[in-house]
Length: 280
Image (cartoon, rainbow, N blue to C red):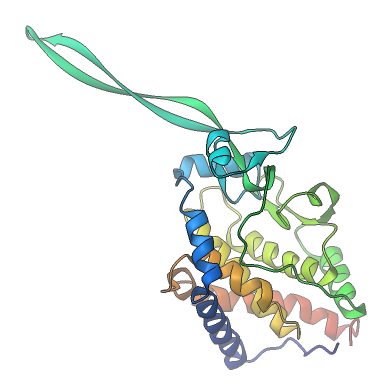
């Protein structure tokens, strides 16, 4: 496989963005997408505080639900799975006397609840993505270069081999973990995806929605891979569609500028492999 040099012109990056938008729209129009939406609609929307709690316990959690909800959906929790703790609001009323009259007072407290991520359950789940396959000398060199030269530590993590997550950026330790069992092409794309998170979403108080963060990171991964002469559309189109959850592509359109700028930054990082004659 040959690689383009990565000093991409602005119009070429813009073309990749247009290809991405068109590809995602194609996913929206598929029956598979409706099946996926029906599945996702069964999950509760958690508060920002609980999302942070979940991510601190499991950085690659994507869809969480209670033991009861998973059972109703036809899934079983894997033996030995550790529950994720969230705060569940509990409302109650009391009657008090004020100025000789009985008044109803509303109260709110929180108790700990247990939820499990989709990676912790057994059963067939609707998916919009296909794992990327492929490997050659150049891809291996790009992976090696990223591991050896990234400012953020990158680990090939065997503990992820039995999970649905392909990788994650740890907000606390500020390092990247990638599933060791992935084919090299998917490893490289995942490294780029998580590098994007490490650049754009490295703060716990970042208030962007999870959907926007994931659309940004995967869009950047797609563009950078295209700039390196690699095609990840079988995965990226479905991934972006899954997080967008709407035919208007709002998360993508609102992020165009930051996606382009960050893509160029990561492409410049990989350009050094070309400049040093390490892959050409």
